[in-house]
Length: 244
Image (tube, rainbow, N blue to C red):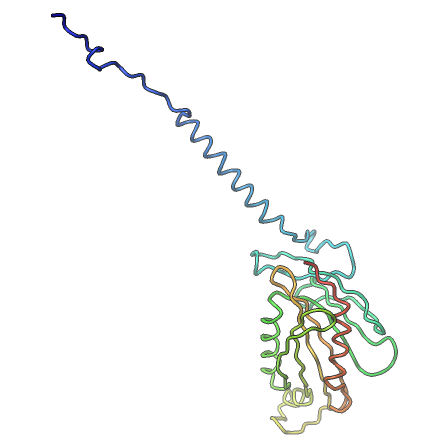
């Protein structure tokens, strides 16, 4: 009987299939994927609407932009346009800057005609309207010369606003600075009082627009009541255009 060959017994040599990609090819592909991922990260990280800064100054296209520093969101200093401020009927507008950051504009409005010591300011800050209102109210009361009302949430000027009023007696502050007064004590400083209403509107990048209406006088009776302050605040809110 003839002997069967190895091939006929099922021991045929199988050809080894080569992988579609060599180890070198796989390494190159991984590097390319990593580079693309890094590039995408930086693209989306920096293409988020942040304003350009040139020579330390924010580059803007308008003199009425509302700008905030959203650094707590992105890390580092990054400025964003939150919207624009228009005119308030019967008031003259002036543009300044926050003392803590020259790149954040602060707009002041004063009555165009004589009629009381009234100022409306509009600027921006980092934080939601609710959080900023709570923080600012607590700060006002911590000074020991102001009494603040409760924070209210409602519609003013067609927008959702967090707002509260507060009254300030500057006489106590000036006298205490001279080492003469404690609560209820009288000093030689001239009396000065103010009644204010602060408002906060939510904006993009976890920031908000901050408005403050201040009425000052030599006595508390010289200051506008809360109802009148609320009317002015509503007019100011109506001049604010927040972008989505």
